[in-house]
Length: 136
Image (cartoon, rainbow, N blue to C red):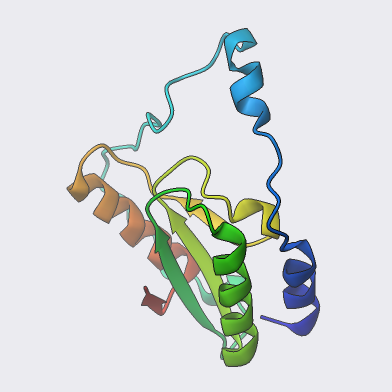
């Protein structure tokens, strides 16, 4: 993670959280689907490992997030410090529609699927697509 990007992320980290507009507008949205019901295509896809998305020599770390933690700002600060210190890129692998890390500028990928097997297959595609070297 370069210094400018990490400084942008650190500048966004505050403990306050904005009101969720989706909750307020959901009754007026005719296209709303229940949360977490996104369809994951059940096809045999071959996504090649693509290293063009990251700087040569940069390690990409995936961080699994299973829910929306109350202390997202604290974890965001820790992840930003880790990324800056170790010079790695962080990709959040979220199993919910909103993880809370989006507002800080982290790259967040939604892991879709109704069963553990489908979620594992989806995560595998994301790992190969972003060239993630380590998943925590």
